[in-house]
Length: 155
Image (cartoon, rainbow, N blue to C red; front, side):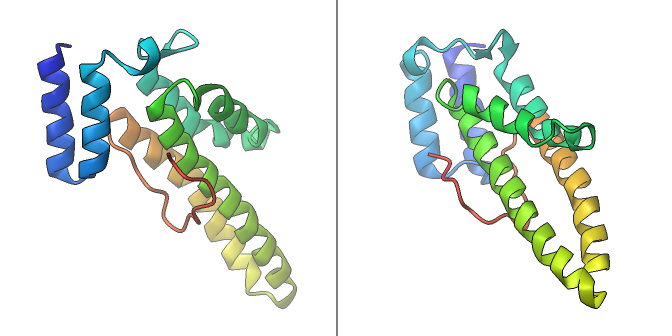
């Protein structure tokens, strides 16, 4: 993809409201400089966008027991290497931290029955949100998880 194509794609994302003016200016500067610190758009040999999509899907491995560790490790090893991975990872981690808090509250509320439906809804959201985020990521969109509390800044 040429520099002109990349800038045109960034302009389109800005006009759609996906990028703010500040984000657009920063991304445009990175494109003009040839990428931040020579970054090739790959993380551990995987295309950056594919890595971010897999990072969003990684919490689904919770059912296998590695779902808490895998997203954290993926984000930790890529956040300093890729601006895109840092932004997607921060949003994903904010949702994971928020969902743990919501689960704890719903668990306590289960003692008075109201927490049981809340845990069911949280379980559905914990499956649906990572899938939606991965689909959006595959479409080159940065998606914010609904109900996620911002613990980690993207920048």
